[in-house]
Length: 433
Ligand SMILES: *Cc1c(COP(=O)(O)O)cnc(C)c1O
Image (cartoon, rainbow, N blue to C red; front, side):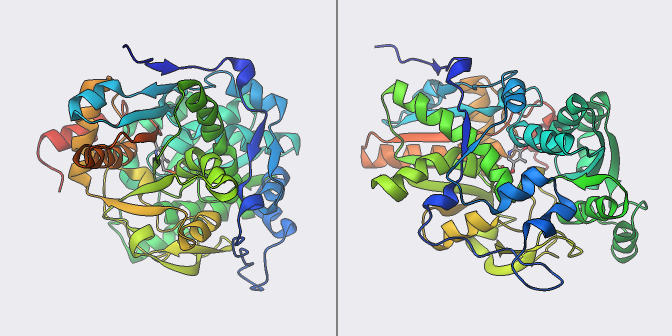
C-alpha cells in the first residue's frame, strides 16, 4: 500500500488562535524580574522595549489568543505548511517507525521565524511605531523581520552576529533586498558594542552581544522598539501555529505521535511544534515523549542551571528564569548559528524542570551526517539547526528498530539550508570538528 506523502490543509483550515500553554501548566513559570527593582516585571516595564501587543501576550494566562486578520492574511502566503511523511528516510533506515515532519522550510525566508516576525511587526505598526531594531544569529530572524517590517512600512536595523555576517554573506543580501540595514555585531555604533570590542578584539560575536546592541539603540532612539526572535513567551505563543496545524494533519493521517522532536536554540520552534501536543499530556493523559535537540557545544538544557539570568550579554533585558550557561557564555563557533544561545525561555525552563520534555545533546558531525542523509532521501537540504532534530529523529527510529516497535515520530523541519551551503562544504572538506 502506498503511503500518503504529504498532508495539506486548506487555507480556511488554518488556526484562528494561538495556544498559550501557561493556562494548562500545573506549575506556572516563575515571573521575569525587572533588573533594576528585582520585582516581577509588569506590562509597563515590557512596553519600554516591546510593542503593547507583545507585552500583553508575554504576561497573558489566557489559553487561546486570537490571531489578527492582517496577520492571518500574510500567513496565507505560505501557511498552512505541509506535514510530510518521511518515507524515504524510513526506507533508508529500514525502521518500523513512521516518521513525519512539519515542513516550515516552505516560508519565503526559508524558516519558521516568519510566524513570529509578522505579528511582532503588526503589533508595532498598529501602535504607530516607526523603527524596529533586532539581532540575528544565522540571519534567519533578521530576514523574516525584514520582510515583515517592509510589509507594514516599518524601518528596521539588524545587528548580525559577526561570525554569521562573514560565513553567510547571502543572508545579508536577503535582508538588504527586503530593505533592512544590517550591521555586524559587535559594532562601533553602540556603547555596548565598543566595550565588547575593546575587551575581546577578535570575538566572533554572539546572539547575546547582538541583543545588547539592538536593545541599546531601541532604548535611546525615539519611536523605536525592539523585537526578539526567540526565547520570549510571546514568540513561543506565535509559533504554536506549527503544532496546531500538525495536530489536525496527524489526525488526517490517522496517527498520533509517540515522540515529538524539535531543535532548540532559544526554544521557539520546539515550543511551536510541541506545545499543542503537550497540552494532551497535561490535560488528556497522553504519554507523548518530547525531545529538544541542542548542540553538544551549547548544552543549556542538559548542562545549564535554572537561574535568573539576562537574555543578553550586557544585562539590558529583564531577568529571565532560565536554564542557562550564563549570559557571558561564549558559545563555540558552530555552524548551527541559530542554536548558539546561552539560555532557554521561562515557560520552557519550567516545563523542563517539571520533566515534560528532555534535552538531548547532538554532536555537530552527527548532525551534518543526518542532514546529508535527509537531503539525499527526502530531497530537502535542511538548515544546520534543523539537522539536530533530524539526528534525534534518526536515533529514535533506530531505537524503534532495535526494539521491534512501530513508533510514530514527528519532528519539525525548522528551515532549509540553501543559504548555508558553505557549512555543508566545510563538512564535506572534513573541516568541522
Ligand atoms: C532560529 C532558528 C532555530 C533556533 O531557534 P528557536 O527559537 O530555538 O526555534 C532553529 N532552526 C532554524 C532554521 C532557525 O532559523
